[in-house]
Image (tube, rainbow, N blue to C red; front, side, top):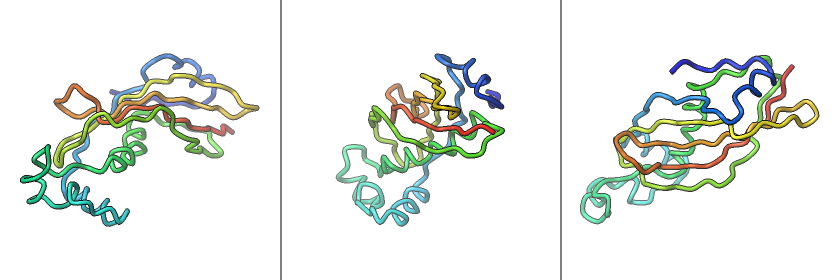
Length: 154
C-alpha cells in the first residue's frame, strides 16, 4: 500500500472515518526481544529464557513484551503516513488500549490504522487514530487502541 501524504489539516480531514493504511510486516526475533529486555530492565523469563519457556510457558516459546509490541507503533506508523508542513508533532496519549494475544518470538506484526476523528484545537490538529497490531497468520490481534497525536501545521 502506498504511503499517505498529508500536507495540511484539510488533507487530513478527507480521511476521517477511513482506513489510512496498512504497514508491512516486521519480525520480532528473539534478539530484538532481548535488546528490549536490556533497555527496559525487564528480564522476566517468559521473554528471555528460551529453554525455560519451551518447558513451562503455555506458549512453548518466549514472547515479546507487550510494550515492545506497542513501541513498534512509530516505526510502523511511518510506513503508512507522511505528514509534512509541521512545526511539531506530539504523541498526546492512548485510549482503550488492550493486548489481545501474545506475540511469540519470531512472529511478524503489522499496523492497520483508521482515522477515527480529527478536531481543530485553535490551529492544532488533534488526530485520533484507531489502530490494530496484527500478527501474521493469526486472527486475534496482538494490540488494539486509539493513539492520539497533535499536529502543529505551519
